[in-house]
Length: 361
Image (tube, rainbow, N blue to C red):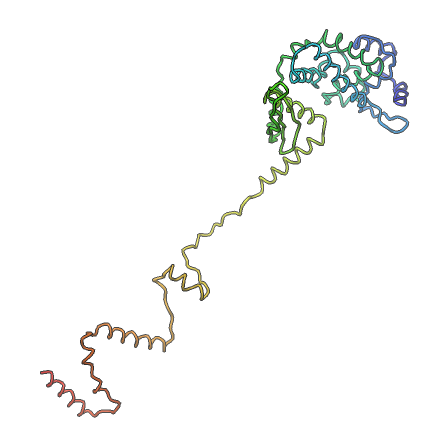
């Protein structure tokens, strides 16, 4: 810290005289600084790119971290005293409203802190949190310069007594859930609430715990005495995490990219455009053909035979026809005596025919 202070002492501030900085700070915090170096550091944005003798950056980020913790403790103390008997959920919600980034940004602008911030000029145009960060850093400077009681007086007398109506803030509903849903819809990010726990406190009152999930990535969780209260707190913490943790928002959009890529890929094969041929019976191996043919008898099936096979088939068919047309009663009169392998003459054939003719009469 001493090295940082030495560096700050050598930085030329945009004031004609050092007295102007003291006067400006007096109008803001209500007293004159003892060690001006802390306040100079609190008003130095990281875009200045100053470094100390060891090469480490010199800016207000460390004081911002300290001031954020002190501010939570002081505002929590004030809210605790101001609302006796209120439950933890109400006190937590009220403190969150008082120290949220939008409130601190507004205070920094109204108090004139923004005009004292040292930056490269380009960052201030698009960094909407510069004022709120400087406000927290200023609280950290007051704590190092004057202690906790001085920070308490600053918040009570300069902020809550003159600039913020704590009762109005406490009972004003800030819909963080709607803000998160709106952000998700604009960025086409899938969002859902998961209930992690449901239990009762010491007095038997129901309590709920919900977590925000963005594209399957776990966000922040919140606990409250109703589902709405717990989801509001989870939404608020997730919004703050999206603002302050670049790696978290990168993870969300990486998961979104994977999801949209999977949706673009086909999930099944493209249908064929050829006509279906299921009505054609496929040729199967010999051992499977008989069973299939029994199931699918084809009346149009043709068989191809050789010449010898055709002649044999014709003879068999002729014999079958004679057998089918013969009278069963003639089977006993069937005579084989006229069948002989000896060749007969013409006269013998005529004589046999005449004999048969006369015998019929």
